[in-house]
Image (cartoon, rainbow, N blue to C red; front, side, top):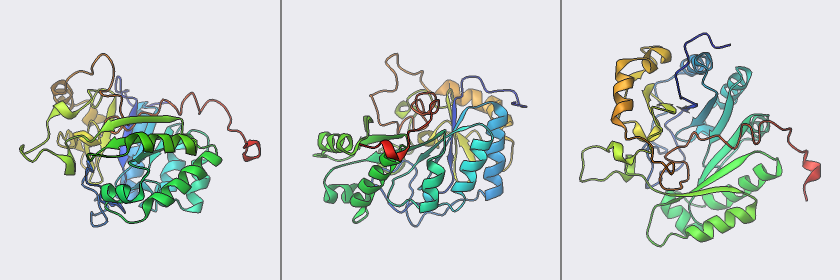
Length: 295
């Protein structure tokens, strides 16, 4: 049972367990890349945070980055979160999943999410600034579907002439049924260079109110897109103290309220990446079929 006063309205926490990524996407909201450090947060720091999230009564966590599968501690974190009764989502670019990680992803209450950009390998490489990633991503999507791992995908529009419709159709052919489309948000590498910093207008309105994000260095904000609005640091304060602080309340008030029609536009969840509605209860409530029922 939670031992800390719950934070009203917060339904999930994004944990950026590493700043390092094997891609360097042109629109990355966190400026991640192969050269970006993993961050100051240690394994023990993250374990304390996961415990605090559970104590706060928040029902879900999302492991994100950077590329979370690059963290050697991801399996341990998944186990700890599940043992604490949390629903887990891993937001990965799906270029490489270790065999041992597949076993963790198959556990009840664990979901996968990814971003997808084009059915054309050259166009996909241009956006991610990597070479040859698309065949591996397709193969890992197919593997996740075969293993009955809940998977959602977001198609993010980044460049002119991007093959958005074709990418969506390809995802459906691969067996992905939960797909949304969004534009790149003007934060991180996609920030408007005419301004010194992003603005709250780029936010969907659910960060701070329903979402919490913790950076690889321990900074706490409302979501990965609102990293420019820091409320505190979990290496210096308990998460509960930060979320109940005047600073948190002031930042929440500074973010425009969500629009009536939801997170605008009907997006890839990059503005709302911790959206795990498809995991509990739709997927989490019922046992997964065995691989033997695959058609």
